[in-house]
Image (tube, rainbow, N blue to C red; front, side, top):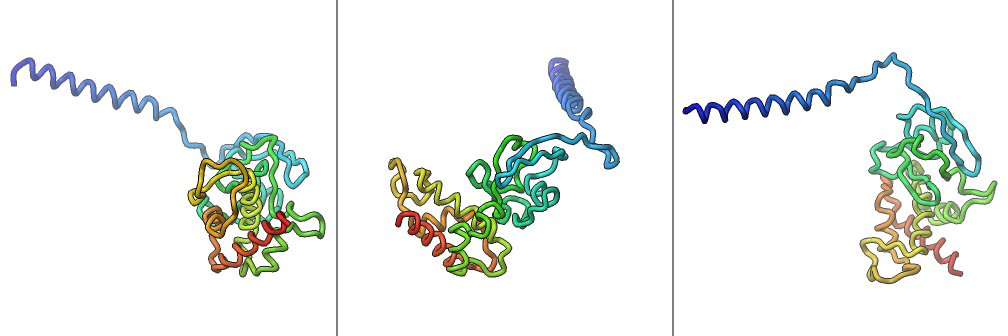
Amino acid sequence: MNDKDSDASVSRREFVGSAIAGSMATVLPVRAQSPDEPVALVKCTLTINGQQQQVQVDPRVTLLDLLREHLHLTGTKKGCDHGQCGACTVLLNGKRINSCLTLAVMHDGDQVTTIEGLANGYNLHPMQAAFIEHDGFQCGYCTPGQICSAVALLDELKAGAPSVVTPNLQDVGPIEITDDEIRERMSGNICRCGAYPNIVAAVRAVERGRNA
């Protein structure tokens, strides 16, 4: 190896060393929080089922845990806690979301509707009534999320929001509701009891009632 190759080799080593040192300088200041160290609570205001709620919440708390553990609205279920089963579906400003995947503090000023907020007193929401009429549930654990998702589904179809099975994506306006559309749009909500045909029938029944 000549001097020129040696100088180049040293330069490469110096470059790699500098890069590692720079990355460590970026990583090292990040300190894991001690379990005993108090967490600063964050104040936020949400309108939940038509009622304004002011809460002081740990910024790490999910919307799901706020609803269940802090506000005792246990209709919304915790299933997988990873956004894969849909049991925790609620309506946020009229659109469905998985409440386990979002932090409560992100929704200051937003409106949240849970399964408890769909009925009007003792009068069931049409989707709730349809699920009962068509046996759209068995164990019932996934049902709150299924119903919230189905309510939002019909609004999405009315607004013309397409899915992967929509025949013509260029159409603007209400989309024809088919069993394929319902199944595709409800695919994020898992029913371990297998009540899928009855769920589809319930959604179709509410859609027919809207168009009557």
